[in-house]
Image (cartoon, rainbow, N blue to C red; front, side, top):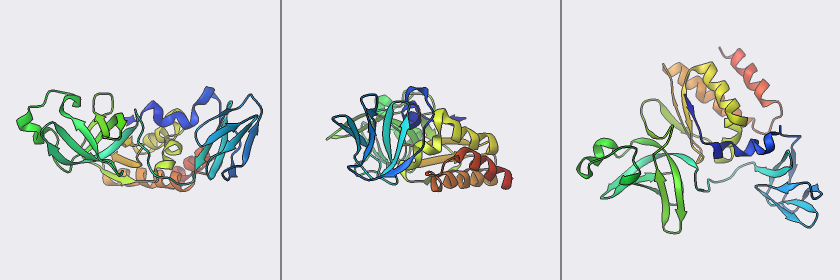
Length: 238
């Protein structure tokens, strides 16, 4: 079963429309004109114009204009799903490395079931891989939760990293791209908004095939007709 959060898909879901043609833009460049357009992520409105705020690929989805960065660091946001590694156990919860300047903190009360304080390492030990949701971001820290579908300890398989900016494209519209990978490999896949991906299949060959497909998508993220190219990749790599 492929697990991902709705917020991980938002790059490709505005107003139910298909993405229109994409073009490379630089900060300050006008990407759309008119009151009908809305400034999405990576863009801002100035008067009657929508302006690029960063270097990347402009995309119009319905009325929303957004700029997809070519690369970029993970910026934690509320409701992001992350894949992290337990790095320490404290009296009230677990410290989780989420590949960010700050670690995440998973409080004992946010575990999906009751855990005895004296047996915390039996539920989650240092080095365990987890899928968790960010429920609060503040100057004091990043709070995590593991209550929800697809969240929890990830056992078996392996993890690897892609650039976080490529995650929405790897997931695809309404999960279409990652479902394509699942259908062709039979693997379980959990994608973190922080760029860490967990894959588990029936055998190592299936897992490696899923990883290669994901890395293929990450490398071709700016290419149009990517779904057809991925389908062709699978037909050539049976």
